[in-house]
Length: 95
Image (cartoon, rainbow, N blue to C red; front, side):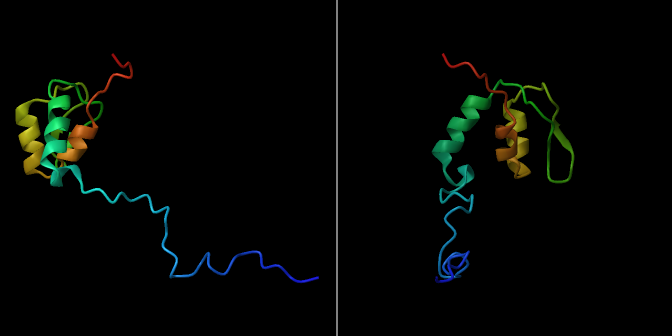
């Protein structure tokens, strides 16, 4: 009988790209103005589900606060707009 290796030699080879990296090849929404504008339109007037802070830790919105133009601009200036948009409440029911 021949010994069969338990691990294939190519599994750890540096030449084989990691296809399950969890990283998207799409540019972030901030690099796509059309996607960002749609996400902002969808989020305006909705409450946030968690505290949104700027990079210095100052509160922009608390849970239940509504997303307004002023909070969008403040988050954009602090470079946390994606975080704010991800915090918007979304109804699970589709109409």
